[in-house]
Image (cartoon, rainbow, N blue to C red; front, side):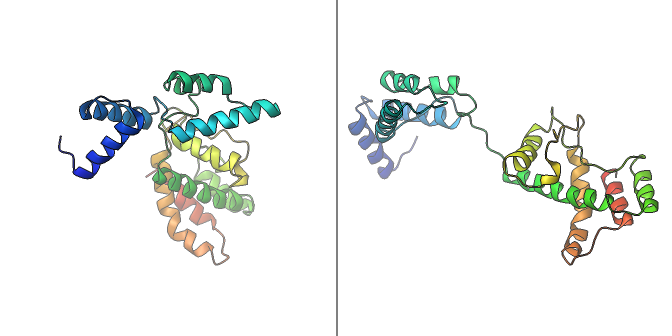
Length: 221
């Protein structure tokens, strides 16, 4: 393993400041272990400043009798004992390595936007046009069913967070977004068909029945 002089100096500084390593090889092993543990969500790494800040906040919270969801006494024991694996065990919802992919967020936003236009327009269609749209949708009024909870759970969770936590796309409030069947491929095809139409809707135009049918049929291609 080749290490440049700048990184070697940083390693030496870490050894001197922490006193945790007896040699550069020992320091490298510890630093790699800390980095991997932190990035995978298996351990928590706290700097000296982090520890001091937490203990001060803990003392303030206890003095003011502020109710907290975090077991501050447990966290203090973690710091005193160096049990940095414990928070990841105790608070799995907080310490994890998951992050939504930007591409998935963009896709879900585009899907919700498309279905907002479709559902809002369907509600205002003339009876004859509504029957045509229903005929193209197996006899049912088109409605966004969500994503598959087993295989597309990340997309489903993004949709739920956008609607329920961020108050976007309020039309879909209260839906569970679980289609119970694979949905992503169909949604992608529908979005691809909707995008060129979407550009014209900014001019105040509304979807026509034939456009809605075309979008629905694109999903079955």
